[in-house]
Length: 146
Ligand code: FES
Image (cartoon, rainbow, N blue to C red; front, side):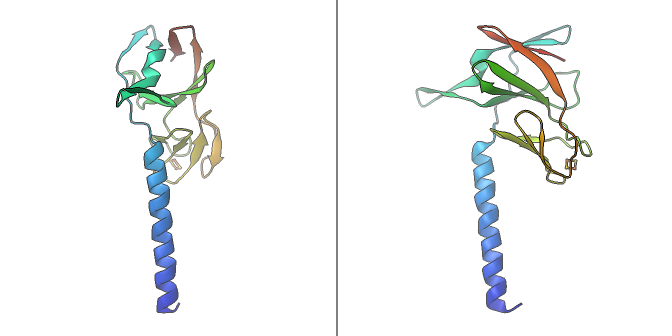
């Protein structure tokens, strides 16, 4: 490989890496909640947890994270619509690493598997979908059966 070609290839790779990293960082949810109840492994979360105040405005989140004491890994609750929520266990179905949750996907830092916000595999090496939990809701709360 010629020096010029090497530099060009390397720079494009770096630029791509930074662009993807910036995109994912911008989309990554960082809101862990601790304000929920847990009665007989049935979690109850206020729907208002999906809103954050920013500069005087309310912003709606696509997901929230929590770590119930009885689970080894956190769970992520995705708001798919006003009437549909999906709760996903954040353990990779490939070899068990903890996943990173983004606005519309989960990504494994170990070998790069990706899953959509329903827990379905979209990119290997994982072959199986993620564990999910039965999730219901009423006007005020979301209920998750662990
Ligand atoms: S443990 Fe997640 S891709 Fe291998």
